[in-house]
Image (cartoon, rainbow, N blue to C red; front, side, top):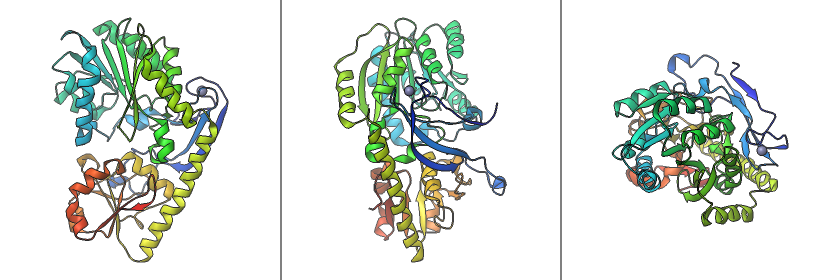
Length: 409
Ligand SMILES: [Zn+2]
């Protein structure tokens, strides 16, 4: 299988009325952190553009990099950040538990990462984590969470139903954004829940992406940016009905969508569809205006950073999340502008950010080589980081963000 291709049809409805919205350039996959021994070798880089489907309203990356290349050794673990632990605990209690009727019920998490959600479900039901990443299998099993190593598909779903029976609850959180043959994946989820189960998925809400111009959410691992309109249409293709929706604060704003085969749409569904309609989510102009603000954002951010560098300031990046790599690469930054990145995830320390090739250190580097300015790449944890780093602020170090606006805090 070739490692890259560009789709010519919509991934959801297979139509061909696609309008290009934004071209972010050519860059490596955002999770392709570089080992020191490979620093001189050329990286695999691919175009990154987003298109809008005029038929089903799905905003999507048509540039598809092979999942084997993207996910076999995945450095993002959900369990590593405190806010995510809190989120998944809440998720297990409020969203999943109401649909568990007893300890023999089966709960499956598709793309369950290191098993964080299931850890909280485990006392109440049988559980199964489906994920393709080798390094996550070890972490999941270490927590005694059964692991099924696979890229999810309708075929995988059939194998699982044959071996374990149908599930009462199937969850999939920010994983369906990753998969190109997306219709088959929803078909698989539908088969897993049988006639009576509930499917719950959480996806970053395209309205938030557009309103906040947080273009750094766009990378080769994030192929789809869902509105409820687009997601509901897809879910219906597999015979399920969306019966409930909530807006939750993950990644700014996400949709938590509940679907089943034997339930009717509740009030929340019509209400959120109407919010989207009123916000212009069905209109291509909304997306083009987003693209213009992203291009303007790049000009302002690069100007600020050039200005700081011309005054001899040392700038470092706080956090080395995948989204930070889209941002660094789109801005065209490298280790001449950003001295280093710090990240508390041990697996990333000692590596280099893909494309920009900026070295990643543990947070202690901030004391060894104090910066003048800190670019918050993990901007979604802004408040928590500022609280944690109060002593740096007292010493005169300044923090800044560039999304949604270029702003010195
Ligand atoms: Zn479409």
